[in-house]
Length: 247
Image (cartoon, rainbow, N blue to C red; front, side):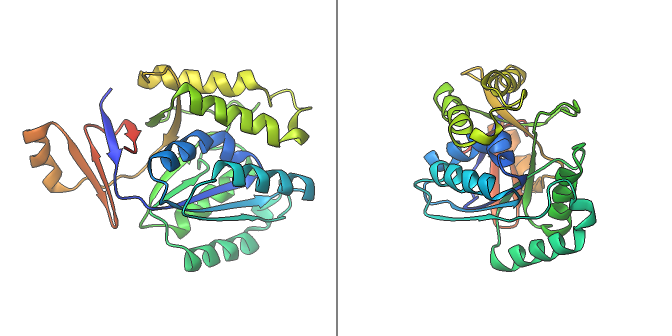
């Protein structure tokens, strides 16, 4: 499968409705990007969690973001399951985030996610960040709402193991849940790896609804068989829009 290279992103915003959402949805990709670009600035915002779960997320985020040039981790205490009825307050926090931090890439939930809190975060992401590359990650759950992603990040088996071990180590409160298991996380990584023919056999996947293709890239492709996907302050050099690499 043809791949493209993320070359202009220096500031990442990662958003999760609940503690562990970010790590499940894009933990491997964040680790992958930081290994190749340690000068990244990362702002991490989680919106709901009990005191115990908030402590878990802060510890997990510190471990995952170790080595980042700049990192900021916020874990709020909005009521789990009630986001649609707390929209005004959550929207205010989104506006504050946008004033404080201008990201190049935003990782967020899917707008088609069946969990109401996830959907609210996704909708407010699109409402607030209109000049950024938005990548919607997936969180497996009993509702069975996994879709057909169109952006893949191949991951080494080592990074996949780091992701899974981090989830199991730091989120002890979730151990009683029948879905929070190593085989589930490995299974989704393997499925997405098959879909993009990842060299390692593993990948994370995202929904990239909008990418801007520069007219000059068409001429460039004719000469080099690559394309450029360009956004303000962000350039992605690509040979397709299917597989992302950050080299």
